[in-house]
Length: 265
Image (tube, rainbow, N blue to C red; front, side, top):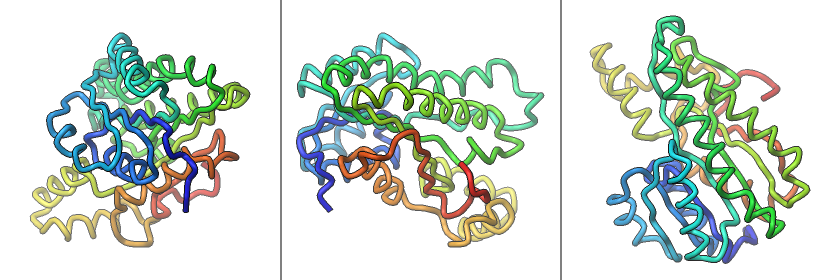
């Protein structure tokens, strides 16, 4: 399917990560020019050479508004515009008893998982408003609507992010900017690899057995009985940011294999 976004320009944060780079690949295939950002870009610059499109890689700290402003400005200077923003930057943060988490634990997740999106929106929306066309997609999580007890710092930041993007969607649509979230669950990434390696060690089982037991005990809603693939998340993002997705606004698109066991988001 032609997504009708050839020659658009997309800014992707957290682009070194699995979902970020998978999105870069699928958008490159659609003829989208790319501004890719992460904290460290050595690996990103190397991987970006394989993308069949014009690419600009920029190191930027999303906890710093000035750095985010520079990122957006340099992207526009290189390509003339930023039409699409895919914000994937984030951390899992500290885990444990919610009342034993420190202020710093909560603030770290808040700054990286929530405020980073506010900063990116501040830096990119004015130019998109002037152009009258834009797409803004943030990666939330199943945790935003189905929180897990030991992940309170992450839960609260992601829930706030979902509310923020919904909030933006009401007024930005009149400027041609559509704002949505995509919420994955248990995707094959470095993050879940680390989780399963730790689980395997604690249980004295193999990696695959750790995954199997996690699905059975912790994610019964994933009846597909496997982790998702980054390409599956990227495909959903590509649809939402495309011209084909021009009536999708203020939505949360789950890519979670059924993990969230509720009808509403």
